[in-house]
Structure formats: structure tokens, C-alpha cells
Length: 397
Image 1 (tube, rainbow, N blue to C red):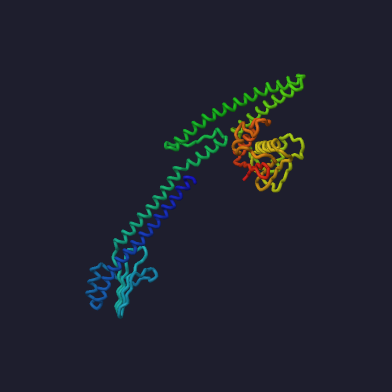
Image 2 (cartoon, one colour):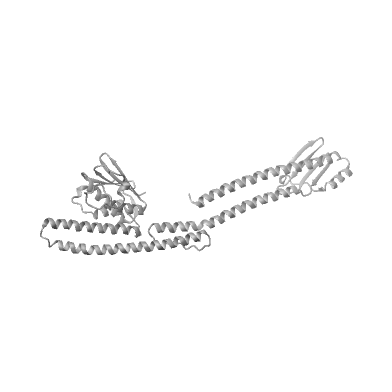
């Protein structure tokens, strides 16, 4: 899980908790204030009701408690806090939402008093507390946005590092900052420039070595033709052929480290056709092709066909019985041959210069090339030995 997702989850948890606490505090304060106000004005209302027949006394109480006469209020817009029915009358206390004044209504026979209370500081204090809670939520949200802004360069840095690891060695991070992000960017750029120089030097060295080796190999093959001893001639041909194969495989293996893939879309059948065209096969009957479910692949056809060619070549080379089977089914290509189980785990053979039997032809680079190509495409390769059959499987999903 990314850092941004973790921070987002923490923000949502904090926001939810703060909102719940805010509503909870508001509910408690509202109930506390309403109870205090109700008790206060209930006492005043009862005092007025008890003196309802003495108008002078009632007026005195109204002035004492700073009450004001008002017209009858809209019942729908008021919240009833208290109502008590008396003989020949009633007392009610109401309030409107978001107001700090209350309405007292006292009725006795034909006498009716509708009174407005003065502003209540307790309610103002409650509003201030709610405002502070709301401000805390706003500040929390702003902090969250600020953290996202601080971490936003990480996505760019990650992308550039992924590009570099995929072979784009001129990838650089263009972030100008005086904090740790800027330091990380500058450090990466310095490291990338150094590694790019080393990689290019190694590539040039290998190209030069390959070029220099091909020349004496070509000359040697030409000179061999002048040798009359057939046995010596064949032996030298084999030696020079091995040298040529080794040189080509080493150069191909090194090119995979720096070459960018040429991605295109093609079918599994096209891939098999391309791979088989790179092989020299004595008899077509040596390979049985079973296409159960042809599918589309997005990859570099050239390199992926080399990987499949190497797997097919190994299957033919190590088979104890022909034909081998190429099976296409559900985003997978199976390469199956009858033979002994590999003596070691598959990972062992994916390393350079490793092979099952030392007396076999080759230098143990075939599966290493396969491994690099598969990894570069983010595909996968598996091995299973079942019913006397070696089953290699390429996964394309």
C-alpha cells in the first residue's frame, strides 16, 4: 500500500472520529443548555402564572427578567422544549433553531402572554465551541492536502526509478526542492549518471570484444577449409562454431540489459511461428502443435520469440522421446517433452553458465536469456515434472 493511501486512510479515520466527537459534544451541550434554559424560564413562567391575576405584578416580573411582549409565533418554526397544562390554561417554552432567544407562552382563561427572552450567552458559547470544532476539521483537511502536496514528488521519483530499472538509463528526476525530496532527487541523478556511464562503457567494451572475436573466428573458419585431415577439420569447425555461439549469446545477453522493448500486439500462434523460424529442425514431426485457445500478447515479438525458441531448443535437446508438444491454452504456452526430471530447482538453471549435463552442447546461457526476457516483460515461467514429462509453462497474464 502506498504512503498516500496510508495517509488518506489515517485522515479518514481522524476526520470520522473528530466529526463523531464534534456531533457528540454538540448534542451534549445542546441538551445541557436546553435543560438549563428550560429550568430557568420554567421557574419564571410559574412565577408569572401564579400572579396572572395581578397585572402590576406580572408587568414587574416581565421587566425584572427583561422579557418582551411579541406577537404569536409560527408554530412550525419553533421547537417545543416544555409544555404543561394547568387548570384553565397552560405554560409552554419554545425555541427556534440557530437562535439564542426563547419564547414563553402563558395562557390563563382570556389572559395570554407571549414573551421573548433576552439573548443567552450559554448558547453563544455553544456556538463558539461548535465553530472551534469545525475549524479543527478544516485545519485537519488542510494538513491532509499539505501532506499530499509534500508527498506528490514521490510518485514522480518512483516512476523515474522504475524507468531506470527497466533500462531507460537516461531517466532523471527534475525536482527542485530544499528538503529531503530535493536531496533524494539530486542523489538519484548523480547515481544514475554514474551508472549510465559504467553501463555504456561496458556495452561498448562488449561490442568491441564481439567485433574483435568475430574477425578471428571468420578467419579461422576460412583457414579450416584448407585442412585436409577430415577429423581435425571437423573438430576445429566445432570449436569455432562454439566460439561463435558463445560470442553471440554473450552479446545478446548483455543487450537485454539496456535495450528498450518494442511492444506490439500479436497472437500466440504468430509467436510460435516466429520462434520456430529461428530454429533448425530436422523433421517437422519432431514438434506437435496444439492450439486450444489462441490469444493476444502485448510484448516485443523479436525477444519473446528468442525466449520461446530457447525453450523449444532445450526441449528438443533433452528429450528422451520425440515429438515434443507446444500447447497454447488460456494465456499460457506449454513446452512439454518426455525426459528425466531436472536435478535442481528451476532458478539454478536461469543463471548464466549453468546446465543439466556438462557433456551437452551449449554453454548454459539459453535459459538465462529466457529469464531476462521474461522478467523484462513482467511475464513468468514455471517448471513441473509429471508423468515422466518436463513441463515448462510461459504465463502471459
